[in-house]
Figure 1 (cartoon, rainbow, N blue to C red):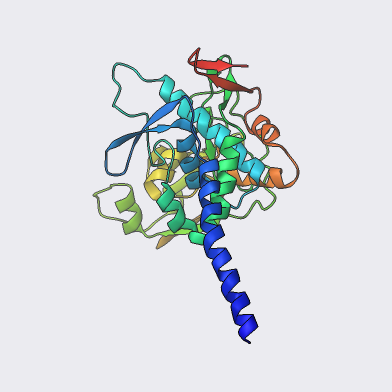
Figure 2: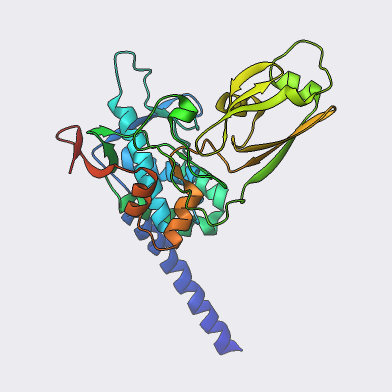
Amino acid sequence: MKKEGITILVLSLIIILLIPSTIMRWQKGETLTGDFEIRVKMPNDKVETLALEEYLVGVVAAEMPAEFNLEALKAQAVAARTFAAKRISQRSVSDPGYDVDTTVLTQAWISDAQMKVKWGWWAYWRYHGQIVNSVQSTKGQVLVANGQYIDAYYHSSSGRKSTERAEEVWSSARTYLQNVDSGEVNQTRFVKTYVFTPSTLYQKLGLTIAPKAFIATDFVISSQTAAGRAKDVRVLGKVYSAAQLRTLLGLASTDIELSIKPEEIQIKTYGNGHAVGMSQYGANDLGKAGSSYQEILSHFYPGTQILSLSKESGSTNA
C-alpha cells in the first residue's frame, strides 16, 4: 500500500507540473494575429479593435455549433471573413466608428470567457482548438465575384426546401445567391408550431382595433418563392412580405403551413433562418459526406472564387 501511495503521489506531481505548461504552450501556439484589424462595438457600447483573424474565432464560435465537421467550420470562417472584409471596405465619411457589433445585426460574436461558459471548461479546450484550426487553415481567404467581396449570407437550416434567391427575400438579386439544394440529410430537423389567438395576433401586428374571431381569409399566402416558401402573405386584409411577417411574429422561417380556426391560427414552420446563402446544417452534412470547405462554398455560392486578402493592395489577390 505504501508503494502504491508513493506511485500515486509521483503521478500527481507529474500531472500538476506538466499539464499547465502544456496548456500554456498550446495557448501560445494558437494565438492568431494578422495584418488586418476590425473595429467591434461590444455589448457595453465600447469599440475595441481586434485582429481580423482573432475576431473570426469569436464569430465562428457564436455562429456555428462547435461540434460541427471541420470542413463546415472552415466554410463558416471564410464566409464570416468575407462579410467582415466587406464591412471594413465600406468605411466612409458617415462612418459610425465601428465596423461590426456582436449581434446578428452584423455577425454574432462571443469572447473567450463566453466560450468557456457556453461549452464548459473541459469541452472548451477541444472546441476552441477546432475553431482556431478552421480560422487558421483558411487565413485570409475570402469569397469574391466580379472583383468584389460577395454578400456571404448564411443561415441555420433550409429545412425541406432549397435555399432562396436573394431577390425573393430582400428584393435585390445576387448572381451567386440562387436556389440550390440544402445539402441537409435531416430536412425536418427544425419544425416548430406557433399558436396565435385573435388578441395575440392583433398585438403582434400592432393593431389597436378590437380583435375578432378568425375567418379563413384572415391569413392567406398570396404568393410563393421559386423554392416554395411564402413570399407575400395577406393578414387581416393587409399584405406583408413573408420576411417582414417572420420578424413581426417571431417565426423561425417562411416555409409555413397554416391551420385556421375561429379561436386560433396555427402556423407550422420548417427550417430555421432566412434560407439565403449557406445552410450551416447543410454545410455540416456535406462536410461529413466528404466535401471540402471549397466544395461547400462553391455549392452554396455558385460562380464565386476564393481569393486571399492583400495588405498591400487593400483588397484581394489570387
